[in-house]
Length: 223
Image 1 (cartoon, helix red, strand yellow):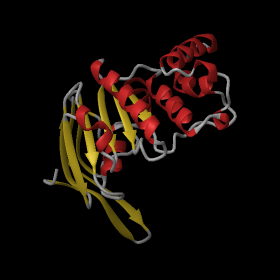
Image 2: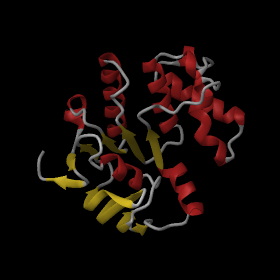
Image 3: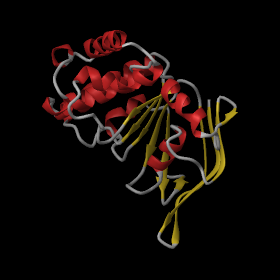
Image 4: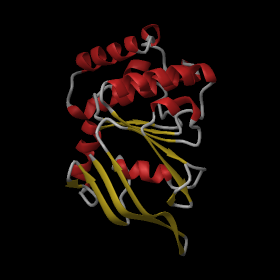
């Protein structure tokens, strides 16, 4: 499903180039639960962003279901991101001043779905997350754990094939980590492809099919 081959990623910082990824090759099959492990700055989040078409490779190949998307123009990548991927960000990135259901429904707006239908879909997601009573609460009125659930709901509202999560455990307590683990287990049972980048591995060990350990922009044989 996902084939990353000999990928390099470099960023320019002042007059020098910083190597974020160094000759990375990864294959991920449909329905697999994959974990990118490693310290901060090791390259795992960069690869996650490449897979989600949020950034481009400097060189190398990225195939998504045999389609070479490495250098697709933005007007092709935008609908691909909307339709195929669900993103769970480390900082949640909820919109202040928008309610829980409105935040969940945001990915549906560019798809031309009516407000009535967006609310219906969002409320169904909130029901599945046991957050129905918080539907009309503003994002800033929610607890940290509730904000994370809303961020998860936003990632799922378009029924994506691939779930990408960057450091999803860093801003929540142990009780919500367990809740998130249960949600991920249900998604895996539904056949979703799940890729998590994090230094925190223990809660989801039993769910993981493959682990790649990142170190200084490369994949290390360490497991």
